[in-house]
Length: 618
Ligand code: C2E
Ligand code: MG
Ligand code: MG
Image 1 (cartoon, rainbow, N blue to C red):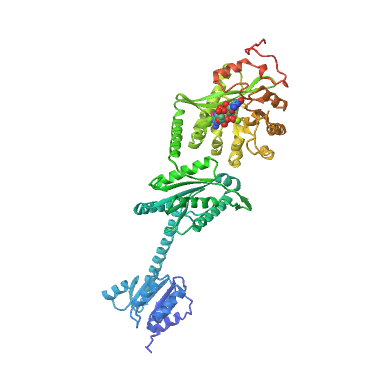
Image 2 (tube, rainbow, N blue to C red):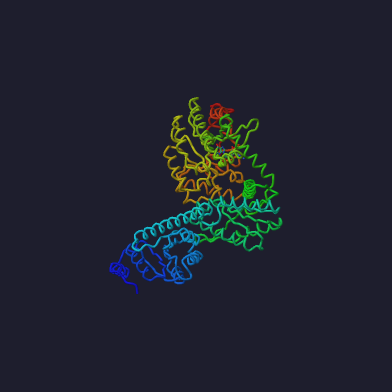
């Protein structure tokens, strides 16, 4: 036994812990075959807040490392076989051992052993000097901290990489990452002269589902779809390259098929993907039936760049969606031509406002009891050079491109200006209605422009009416309802257009601050032929009465239709029987005619034709 000085004995006693040092520096594994040196070092470190675990040989050191996972290792270089250098090398190969800081304790302050320590994978070295525990402790502390920082950095880098590349909900590659994968696979396919298939899978009506059931249910649905798609791909025959499922949009998944052997393989996988949607999806305690639109492209036949192929699969997907969905369509060149024509339409429409190519025609609404005009509906036309474009064509394009907002604002201003002009011309004040697109309503910015137009032309309450289709009103009540209330507060009259085509219930209608129901013209057209339509008109009349709403019948073309409507208590009508939509000056002439007996249903008490009208004698 070596002589032990009293000071050393005191330190050793401390190591046996009587003062319970603060062990907040972490755990150090101290490896030294020399019992005394080990004890002294352990005591010195324990006094400085380290929890020290000790090993006297390599085998024990490796065992303790695996069991205790120390934050740092202090390793004596000179030991009987294996020496510190060999132990360090072995440690580095253990799971979790690659990055733990290792300080080689050496008595030999020479270049060679320092070099050996680094070669063996040591992080640092420390020349053993009895009593310099503070220095050693600080060195260990510095190393553990920097290792911790490095670890955290690596963790957050991995996390960031994951966030940047993978969808948080489904854990599938996101659009960005898919772009990279797709690019790599394309390069491979080019080099090896192989084919590559891409299926773009869109979930039809996902937005409506999300809106009506809430985002949690939407998430549930997407998760289940991704699970089934992965399984559908896996079920297929083994291929040389792994197939990839990615989430490339809110409601879009991409299936990438490298090394595509044949068109038949593409069809087979597409059929599997379609199959995924055959079974209902359990969402929020109910079973949902979902349809899908799948667009398919093949490299090199349909394009040879990532963007072109993705864009074309999107065109094919939208083409099937427009056909009503559920199915798979392979991209064709014609889809591109149609899309280009659409873009051209959009860009021309952009200029239409500036070029003053938009016009409003006015169609009278009449009171079949008096034969008088009681209002006008403003209907837009686009004079695209020599061609007069119907709103059925350009309104959807305006909605797609967002142009609907400036176009509607123009229509509101123009209708108010016209209203004021007729009034100034002594033609009285009749309400004018403007059609509002559902898209505009969903954007939630309608009140300000309406207010501005009304103020600019001094429009009194009750004179400006907005027609909003039933389906547009029904979607997203959270956004719609506050706007409708704000519009009502401005004195705007609200009517539901094309009523009867949606599925509004009475309870639902009661919540809306509306004034008028406009019966869809399809029911009016079938009044004489379809019992259902006649019953529906009667039901709408009853609804209107119950809710104290005016009812206007659209699309009245024959005196018989007018009569049937009047018999069912419908007084207000609009249709070609009375007048087509006409330019403002012709509408002024109609207004000047006053009441007309040929616009009266027999149930009404029509006055004799008024002045200005044909055969007028009043
Ligand atoms: P809507 O609001 O339901 O307008 C009634 C449509 O029925 C008009 O077609 C009108 O010309 C037509 N019509 C009127 N009476 C008869 C009839 O007796 N028989 C037949 N067969 N049709 C009749 P138009 O002008 O082509 O407008 C079509 C749709 O385009 C409108 O349906 C409306 O939804 C939309 N629209 C028109 N102008 C605008 C506008 O300024 N803004 C917006 N957002 N949409 C508009
Ligand atoms: Mg309308
Ligand atoms: Mg309508």
